[in-house]
Length: 110
Image (spheres, rainbow, N blue to C red):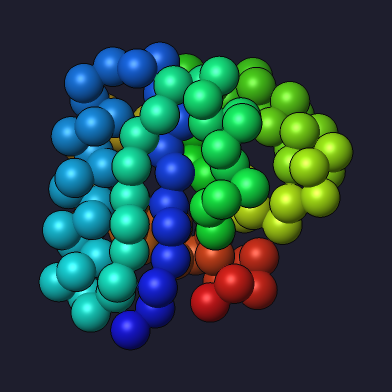
C-alpha cells in the first residue's frame, strides 16, 4: 500500500472537506493508505512540507506560483497542482484520487 499524505487547499469551505473525505475513501478502495485533509490557504502554506502532495482548489489557481515559491523556500519537494474544476465541482473523490496519483507519478513520488 502507498502511504501518502494529501493536502487540499481551500477557502475553509465545506466542499473541500467533503472532497477530502470522498478522496480518502476512493484511495482506500484502491488499496492506498492515504491521509487526505483540507485546510485553508494560510494553514496549507505553513503545513505543506508535511505532505507529499498539495492540491489547490480551482479558485486558488492564481496562487499556484506563491505555493511553488513557498515550497522552494522551505526546501520542500511537495507535489503541487490545481484541482480541475469538473472534479472539484462534482466533489468526485474517485477522479481526484486518480488525478493525485498522476500528480504524484509526475513528481516521482509514486
